[in-house]
Length: 186
Image (cartoon, rainbow, N blue to C red; front, top):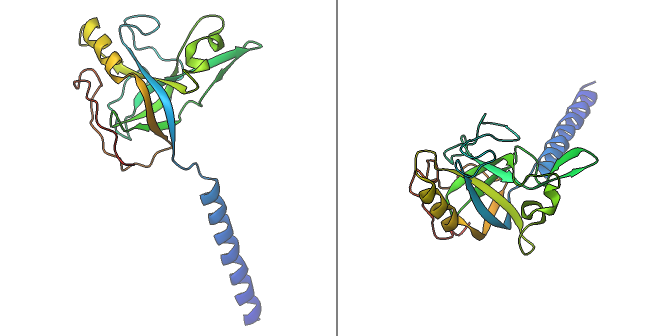
């Protein structure tokens, strides 16, 4: 009888370990990817002078200060097929952008019109996935926002499904001075 209980306990422990290993293997792991990053602001959002977003997850409107808990809204390309909308990257996907020291969360769509799949947000830029981060700028003038968007635009490495411990420079991008950092060793 004791041998039966010991054997049952061994199988139970083995089953638990296999289940834990399975969860660990299938959990999304962080990985680096090189993207073309641009910015959009309160002034050039669709519609202009708004913070309306197309796929709210954490925020009701575009925003965020860039921490893991309050990531900045990120827009991604999308396409329409047979009257169905398909995002290039799923809403709720989290990124870390080392050059900005900000976490970002997919909550918006980049590109509009009847065939967004023909636009640059979906097709990418020179083979790179296109990400468009909300820089805000609602308390600044249009020129300040535009200069910031120019400053952050470019090909850069980001981390998809990042861990929580990366360095952060919190605050809305334009309002916090549009800080850009040297690439970190990550």
